[in-house]
Amino acid sequence: MSRSVYLNGDFIPVEEAKVSIFDRGLLFADSVYEVMGVLDGKLVDFDGHVQRLELSLNKLDMPMPLSRDEILGVQHELIRQNGLHEGLVYMQVTRGTAERDFAYGEGMTQTVFMFHQQKDLEQTTAARVGAKMLSVPDIRWDRRDIKTTGLLAQVLAKQAAKQAGCAEALMVMKDGTVSEGGSSSFYFIKDDVVVTRPISNDILAGITRHALLQLAETTDFRIVERSFSLDEVLAADEAFITAASTMVCPIIEIDERRVGGGQPGPLTKKLREIYFKNARETSV
Ligand code: PLP
Picture (cartoon, rainbow, N blue to C red):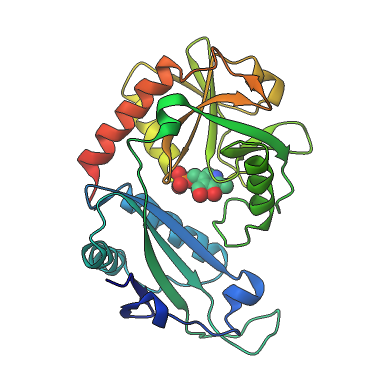
């Protein structure tokens, strides 16, 4: 059976899904995207992702092409047609197609597409034994709060990480502070306190981060949102990342130096358990 994807109102076989070479998403990365996790065929943190999509679009002067319920309907149909049990649903909205010009006109017809990816989220090797990171300079633009498809800095960062045998890059800003992972929010734990960078234009406001911090508040976890250096991280007891595609993933090594005991830490494991339980209870 061919993979079924959604493009501009239609569910079609992936081989038939074509967009114009004049699409501004292709020419200028003038587009935004979202990635949502799927557990047991249901969408995780769905409303958070839709709200961030709208925020990203608004910051780029683009409207929402579909309502929350319409997006939910399309994603459910994609999950159904492709028999997806566990994995991801990707969604992208571009400003649309026009003669090539940096400035854009009014009333453009947006390009909207969505597809699924099968992926294990719960039973993963990284969750069991932990993942490694490589630190790289954060060379991105200043509006990291917008989830655009202008991702070349992250492509280079994550490729460098991969070539060093690591699963993820850890991005360090010019001032020496850690911003986030290549495609994840980053945290370390020291003396039972979870530390993560506060939300600003320096990082993407992770939806998994938001859900996890809300949950942690209801337990006795202590969370501090502040800037921190790589040296501080290397002296931590535990470290982990979060993203829709990895949920809560323990980090055991950075730049070939062990974090804590070099094994997934107990508090990270607990947070992963709490997150998954809530994700299953609140998925739609
Ligand atoms: N930070 C960056 C740069 C990302 O690309 C991502 C996800 O792709 C995240 C953080 C985590 O965001 P979320 O939890 O919404 O997946």
